[in-house]
Image 1 (cartoon, rainbow, N blue to C red):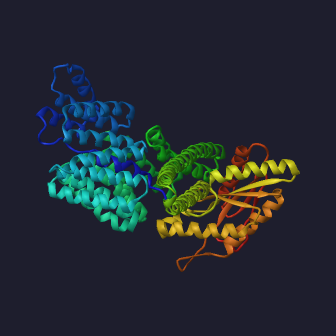
Image 2: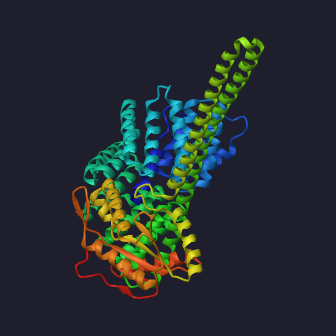
Image 3: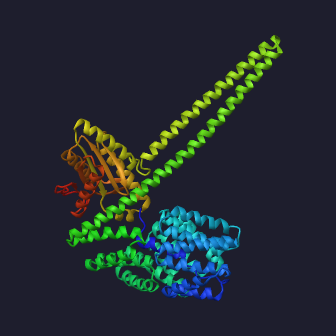
Length: 601
């Protein structure tokens, strides 16, 4: 499942904004107010004030100057400079040994991690801040940290868990009587509810958060909530009201120079223009959004390349469409590689932990065995010293020791077998997709290496096919995330049953699947994939008692020594089929195979 771009941009900014607390000195309060109204004018003032801070200056005052500059730079997408101020803020807070100040510094640093997709680091900082505050009577600060943890779980697509943190943050904000924190928690809760229960349920909550922001004169809150309301209205096909709301939010975000929301708002306006049939205007919005998102919002850049490729193809600008497709493929490859490395590292860590646990068990058994052997020798010596009168007793003791030793040796052998089985199971987990049970990319790398070697020895052909579910996002949005996962599992069972035993099916990522077809040239592979395509188009999937009609587009190519080049050719052929209308099989370098008349489009 995927987060909508505006959601990704705005969620973290909501948690990051909070006005200065009442205990700050008046100059800091005035500077905090400038951040909400004129951040461009604020930065030079902060630079000058920090340059003038001497070694004998008030460290608390300097800490808050670093905090304000960090927040302002983060809002503008200048993350490297913002992180320097976050580190300095945390250093001063720890030197002052102030738990409240330390928790705020950890929160601020964590928001930068979250906005740069370093979710694990962000959660570490947020939970450390939460632990510091658990013994303090600070419901407002606990509300802020719960909101931050919820946003991090949103990035990880765990909306149910995020919702629980947002509900707790809202309760604490109301307990603290802080309208700013209530606006933040309510707006983020509306995001999670929209993902779980639908936009029609989340929209009234966004409007309630907007009313709170208007009452407080919170310009940040107005811009962010208007942007979210625009997106919900577009999801509900209320395009005219969505456009008016987006334009209002765009004007507000432009005045505040909020780079992340600007990119998302312009992309949403492009979506609205496209839905209204105004393709040229949509292209203009998308290209401006690309400038806003470059180097700041990686997820939005990928989405924009995909949208521009599709719309350029509709306008007949094939060269530009190809450029955007190539850029999208490169970004996806980087994302897949990061995902694969993360999975491998997680499995390796899990294996090492289990291996150490097994080693400790083996060492414990070995110590017990040595202790039993020592006890046996002692008893034997004692029996010898006592003499022949105790020979029978000594023999009995020796036999008992032998039985203990045998039992321990059997236990040691059993533990070793369990260790071998655990290693084997970890190997299977590392090669299997957890959702569908199909082979994953790691398994494909091993399979294709063996098949390439066999193909060279035998001289028989080797072919691959890359397939993608047509319009799966729309299906997923209609059914919901859980049903979408069930669809992927049912489809995987269908694909596994549709190929030969010698063929392999891998989940390549998201809704993409890769077929490895040994002893098949492109003609045989074309026939095999066409059978799979027709079967899927003619026989809907049965998921939770509902018939789900869907189609897939396939790209086929033979494999030579360079498997990466073959995958790129298959991917290009598949996207050629997408541009030509989907639900078809395309051989790299050949014309598209048309679908049958009764195929589901």
